[in-house]
Image (cartoon, rainbow, N blue to C red):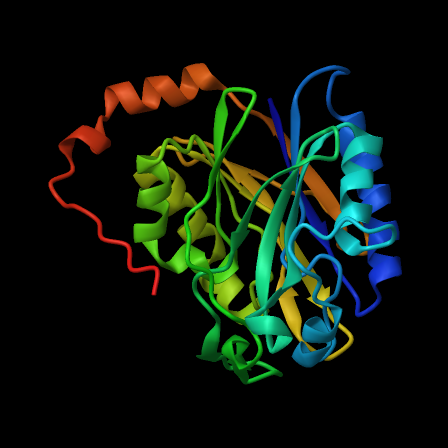
Length: 284
């Protein structure tokens, strides 16, 4: 399997973002031999970013909404068109009877079938020394209550989103459920990304001996928010394959999944067998 992480500067315009994703998927699939399995990860908020959080709530659809023209239907069509397994980093799905929304990652097969979903567990309610200053995702977003690992052609893929990367227990739980690859669609701020993005990705990859596929928002957005970018794939030994973006900051990085490397790392340093701590997940 080939693993691709995309980098975008999404805007508060769903149609414009779909057009950007279509172009990037054309480039991504050109890097993969015909007939080879391919997993492509889109950034967090890939279809709408840079507008008010309440606008995400207004866009939210029921999970599994495949009526003609729905965002989920259009994503499924892109997966079929480009013959790739497509993870839509996060799109808003309805929660609490429409009063709030989930930030949902949706994984589509290369036939456009919804294979599984994950709702962001950890919400970004923080203070950052940047233009935005205060972030309060929990105002309109409902946190998830499950852990998701999905089998794609014999490769177990775990799902997480952005701020989740600061909570290593989630990644250990994904490894315990068999994850060999973990996807992290993100929109890290410029300030926190410069300091923490790559070290956190490498730590999660090394600790759990998995591939990390980290898609990213990048640049200055319509609302003044600045995101760090640096989409990358990190292998189980902690080696990074980092994006080489175009002049606008868009682009992708593709790396081949190597089962032999993963097995070798896990056999030579068997941390899963040596670990003396247990985990407890509280779904609330």
